[in-house]
Image (tube, rainbow, N blue to C red; front, top):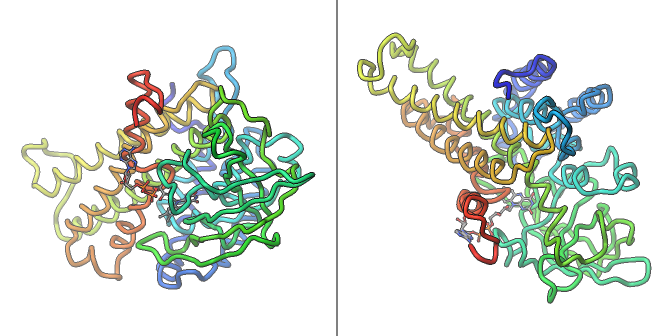
Length: 402
Ligand SMILES: Cc1cc2nc3c(=O)[nH]c(=O)nc-3n(C[C@H](O)[C@H](O)[C@H](O)COP(=O)(O)OP(=O)(O)OC[C@H]3O[C@@H](n4cnc5c(N)ncnc54)[C@H](O)[C@@H]3O)c2cc1C
């Protein structure tokens, strides 16, 4: 395993950093204050990203390109879409997590389509912005408990249920909705359906006000007798009790390292700015002295750097496994658990070290601390990641260890 940024991806990292510096940072505070206002500056960026992905033979970067590769002979040689997305999003989120989550056509639903759609569906929904609707009022961490139903009626399925906390739910072109074909059959009966915005029976109830990532909209959507063509069921319509969640869960193996990457970005942003502010006050962190000879503030910075570096290594390992077709559920959860916790700790601790500058709006430090919190919650909370890791290490099923 190569621990350096692969040479073929270094220009992508540079471009993403440039976008973070020149596009995101200048409008970061504006859209934190103007919650629910669409950042029109991102339209141009989305077109540039589409163009970059079209011309990229390695599979490109971004949620729409994420895929679990098949194992290849001599595994360990490939850096593909997972690595590219992880590295790119780290940089973009160094700029702004909320804006990164709002780039058109790079939604969580796009990752689901990339992971489980048939070739025909991939072609049909190419270029559409897709959000993902799993969570319900009575089903958050326990996604096997979802109550939204999909009942077959001729050439259609009829969807009924309420979905909450849908990132980009108000802005996306289509929503990937998780629904059960038969609540009595448990998780095997849960399928995902692509619902076009404006389909009769689909109603945007509200957009939430949030602690952080305010540039990203979070929607509640009701489905009442919402009729969806049977061809919009993603993947295999059969209920295979052996498969369990099967394909849909695979999405998380690709997206959890991506959320970890977001945490790396915002954590690094806080650390870098804190180092600059402390340097202006004469607190230097030049690594000249040993940990014991350093000031308390210096020692804290070094410890936080070590936390971030260990999270980074876990994250690129999880992405590298996905790119090489090696199962990565445990590593994806490890990366997200470590990076989410590290970013929460670092962003808050940096704020403390900078004291007044940490909490005022003249700096982005307080915003980064707010933005980072969600990264330890969505795509599975800290506790859920630890549970998955424990299951994998102990060889227990989700029934045996809950
Ligand atoms: C800003 C934002 C954006 C989101 N975007 C999306 C999206 O795009 N699509 C989507 O479908 N969802 C989305 N979500 C929902 C998110 O994934 C859920 O909030 C998350 O899965 C947790 O569910 P919950 O909030 O219902 O908490 P709960 O599941 O009720 O958990 C409450 C607490 O109990 C803990 N807990 C639960 N079960 C266990 C257990 N077995 N063992 C130990 N501890 C446990 C949890 O860790 C948590 O601390 C988003 C949420 C937010 C806030």
